[in-house]
Every structure is written in C-alpha cells, then in structure tokens.
Length: 127
View (cartoon, rainbow, N blue to C red):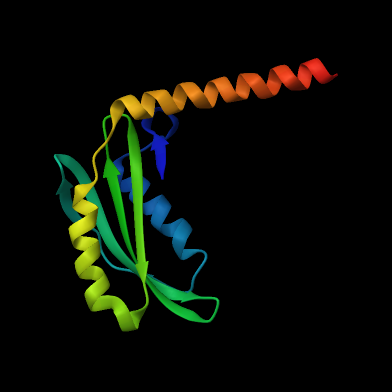
C-alpha cells in the first residue's frame, strides 16, 4: 500500500505509527513491538511486529513502513503463531526485495487522475 508523500503531513515515523495503529484498531488484545530501524535497498524503513486476535484467530503481522522518493509504503505480512518461525524467516527474506518503481508510481498517478476525469465526464454527460 502506498501514500504519496505530498498527501501525507509527517515523517516516516509518523506514517509508521499511523498505519500500525490503524491495524491495531481492528485487533482484539492488539500489541505492537518497538520499531526496528532498517534499510531496504537504500530506503529508510521502520519495522515492527503486531499481534492480536482477529475473528477468534490469533495472528501476527510483520509491519514495515518504507520511505521512498515519491511515497511512503506499507508492507504487511501475516502468519499464525503456530507457523511463525518459518513464516518470519520467509518474510525477512522477501521484504528486503522491495524496490520503488518511480515510473510506475507516476503512471499510476496519471491513470488515477484520468479515471477520475472519465467518471466526472460521464456523470456530467448523463445529467
């Protein structure tokens, strides 16, 4: 998930706090570990574990907030406590492969705005 930095007022730490707190709000008995400062392909990142209960099931998230040039990114991986050792090993191998595709982000922004123009044009045309 991504948020354009121009749309968010705050730092990487603020973004990590907001997004992790939003996740905690959906969990019963939710807890969050302290953030670990890491680097992913040259990008600053904060990572923590979030645990809680969702729909009567215990769950563990590895939450990673990454600061790119254009966006703040949130990478979420989850597992069950019984599968945690193996799953966390995989998560710790996969998450560092994250890269920011700047041209893709720019294209997405252009598509999003074009789509909104299309919706408004159709709405106005139908009135």
